[in-house]
Image 1 (tube, rainbow, N blue to C red):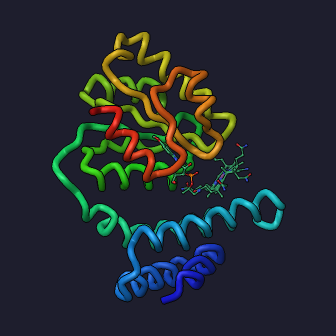
Image 2 (cartoon, rainbow, N blue to C red):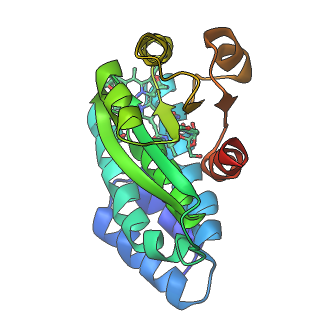
Length: 208
Ligand code: B1M
């Protein structure tokens, strides 16, 4: 199975075909991370470009995202195969007002794959829910934001952690397309990761 076909099926929003393509690629021995990076993620990048150019609208984005998730479901167990004993506890979520969860789900998967116990708080997560997760024992709070209008909720959450007296006890890791190292420095996050695999590596360093 050729990765280009999976890429095209995701762009076209053909979930069943994308899923079948991923299945065939895995059976052909193509590594899960190659399928992820060379077909699923690149397809979503292209979907984003088309949206920016006005060639795609929200429904097309949505069906492409569903097709990507159909493929991703099959990759998840493979990406987690390297699982080792618990590296620590991470609570992760997409910040309040933001419903994008594909990147956050990938990060959660990679964290699980490197041995973390991951509590996924979902999307549209208010600062109080992150605070509660830290009170419940999370050592790392992971926040994802895809909208420039929701990034500021990361700062609100850091402030809420500080107000609850938890800031010295948890590490804060942030990411998402509009997020940068500079932004992380500005809001006082402990770390920024540009992608899912570096997020897992950095989380390991944070709890070391
Ligand atoms: Co939306 N959307 N969207 N969208 N969407 C973007 C983000 C946008 C850039 C598109 C564009 O204009 N080019 C734009 C934001 C513009 C801006 O803020 N300046 C946008 C918009 C405007 C919107 C709506 C407002 C559209 C509307 O309704 N008018 C609306 C907002 C809804 C809301 O959240 N309240 C909306 C809705 C949607 C859909 C529901 C249709 C769908 C989301 C489906 C879902 O997630 N279940 C969707 C999609 C699919 C996208 C694009 C096309 C793709 C996002 C994606 O999944 N990328 C996106 C354009 C783009 O980014 N190219 C776009 C693939 C994913 C693997 O990458 O999430 O970046 P990403 O995650 C990466 C890294 O960033 C990093 O690792 C991941 C893997 O490597 N990372 C972390 C992410 N989180 C991390 C956390 C970490 C560390 C690393 O630590 C904890």
